[in-house]
Image 1 (tube, helix red, strand yellow):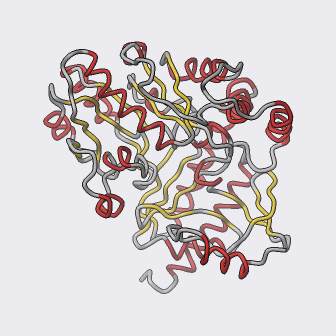
Image 2 (cartoon, rainbow, N blue to C red):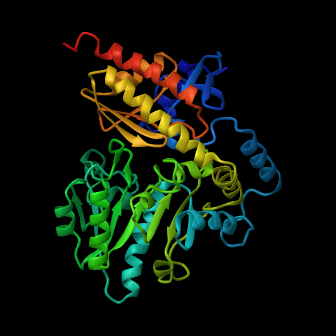
Image 3 (cartoon, rainbow, N blue to C red):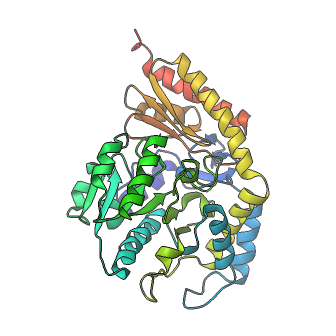
Length: 402
């Protein structure tokens, strides 16, 4: 049996050291719980950073993947297969966009959106190179995605990045109007900023984005990798704000644990594409598409999105009640099953204290505890998690609240 000590020692010798891992090894999972080989149970309120939407050990997903694996895993995009168009049809119906390109991760979906925003303007015979993004944004770690990511902590070691990016404050509509011009290829926005601290953009900013794009012709890219596909109890949060993106990136929950993502395009943008403009060896292979179909059918045909909305309303009330009892909580932000609890101090000790209590959460933007539970979580399970979280915050702030 692999022990924590053995795993840590082996990784220290063989794995690129870019992760600060929590000291636990999981052996199996069921629903919203993960278990070590020794049998200790953990309630999972982070779901692999928003990925395990159907929970762990989901029997429908397991059966579909086993059946697909026994038939055919991969043929590449040199050939047709019967599942890509089926997944694309679901995504088109949910998003209101017209075409899909399949890839393996949210960062790859962002790269495709950035490329085809420029490709669109090239096809118009009036190339535009500039992008407008937002402070506190996080779009991924590949070079293009990193270029529209705000935090210098991520950017500085890899400079120079893709140029012609302007960042504006997420609450300053005048700055946005000033930044978006006839030279802007696209505005890129997370309707709810995830890594930046679970910050929903305001309706005022959404209106300003829509007006700026209409005024200048700039395209709109919605990064719905973390907050999309039912995470808020709606298909996409951009729609709740009245935004109509020209391009959209989706991922994370789409494969419920199997790596799959997609860039979605309006016909206007898609018509600029030519054979050979982009590609992916693994993108949208049979196994990934089979996983996506299981998730999308649960989301749209078996009441999962409605469940997220219902439990999400309960979650918001539960977290705000907790905040009223804890002076260290400055703000609770979120929607559905994406929540950030902003503290008046670093959140890392709270994450550690929660882990000791058998609760899995994570920290983002230094002071924010982030919750991204599986979509299948019950109200009772969420309340169990909130009780552990409250205890963790209390123990970390004990004696500091005068």
